[in-house]
Amino acid sequence: MDRILFVYGTLRKACAHEKHRVLERAAVLVGKGTVHGAMYDLGSYPGLAIVGEDLELVTGEVYALDPDRMESTLAVLDAYEGCAAADREPHEYRREVVRVTLDDGSTIAAWTYVLNRPHTGLTRIPDGDYVAWRRGCA
Image (cartoon, rainbow, N blue to C red; front, side, top):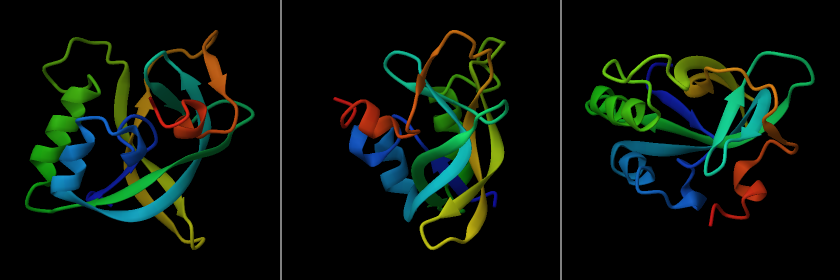
C-alpha cells in the first residue's frame, strides 16, 4: 500500500498541472479507480471528504510509486498539497489511506489527500469527477 497513490483532482493527467509531471517521472499509472466520498469545489481545485452522509463514488487515477523515489515524490506532493511538516497548521489536507476500487472490481489500499477542514457551505461536485466538473480542468 505505501507505494500506491490515488489522485482525484489537479494531479490527474487530464488537468495537465505541472505537478502531474512528478507522477509521470516517478510512478506508473495502474488505472482508474473510485473511492466512497464527497467531492467539493474549492475554486481552482477540489477537496475530498470521506466522512459524512450521502457519500458517492469519487473518480480518480491510481499510481504505483517508484520505491526508490517514493519518499521524495511524496515530499513534493505533500508540499504541493500544503501538508508537509514545514507547512503552517492547520493543514487544508492530510494524506491518509483509503480503499480504492479499480475498474476490474478489485480493491487496493492507497494514499490520497483528504480535506482536513469543515466542508459545510462548500459547493459539492455532484458526480464525483473533478475533470468532468471542470471540463478538463481548463
